[in-house]
Length: 117
Ligand SMILES: [Zn+2]
Image (tube, rainbow, N blue to C red; front, side, top):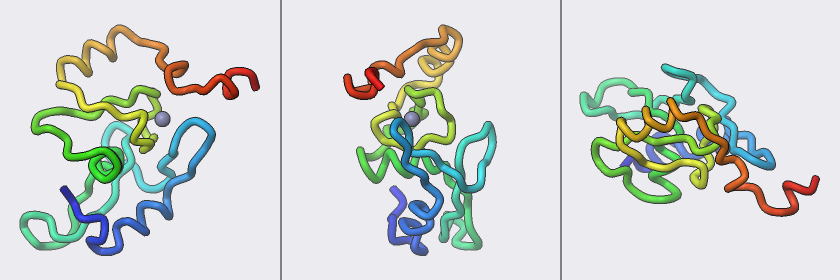
């Protein structure tokens, strides 16, 4: 797990997050596939910075370590969302299966008030 205090990562993270009624949107740099990315000091080589996916950082900070070999699925289907409640570690195969099925899970995360607006 990457220490949030590593190179003021915590502050750089929040600087680029916009909290909306539904998602925590990453408005900073994006890496592959449209996922938010942030430079983290002290990669294994100890040289320079390595880019980490911000949704993975968020999950580890707010929920816990991501089991090895699992990928993070966005239940809200918003790739730049970093809200830990919208993230779920799944196997690659499960992630692909879900991607092919398409789904509408948004309701799962809406309170009644949200729906009545
Ligand atoms: Zn979301």
